[in-house]
Length: 120
Length: 120
Image (cartoon, rainbow over all chains, first blue to last red; front, top):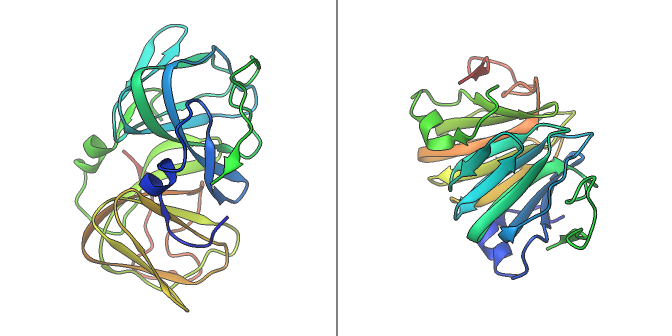
């Protein structure tokens, strides 16, 4: 990790793929990641941790089993640990994610969308 | 903490004071706080934790002993644990802070700017 200011727009310029979070900073043992998403993810949960989504651009729907949480730029939501969720975006969304280091994006679901997190 | 979306602009509308972080969300044992700052804070450090600053509006200078880190909207910096720093803003800045629950804003310095963090 660089010991310098991190410009999120500059970091977003380095990749185009969706559903593949990139590590941009670390605070203690937590990862600060950014991600571009579009379309539907997979239903999953994280048994051991909450997960924070902060939308920077676009509109993100975090589908829960009993309701939808809709996030626009400047809005955040913390998915509680153990709660099944499935993010969805009709057009591209840029978001910041926060969770402990080592959390797998697809949680208990696994599958093709499981990403290896690279530092950028 | 509400189990719903958090709109940061709406939260900022609830207070005017400077250097008094407000709790808007919690992720595991970490606090997500927002703060309005203007002027000079105090030199201090946090011996046990890193501290993340994400600027949402305005320009924030985080003075370190050997250099300044300047942050504009969409830019973040993680002050490493134990590193002395003194935030400064010539005009009002809105920022998001992240650190473990219970961290005191003035760290080892204490003094009049020490704030009790309220949830809003």
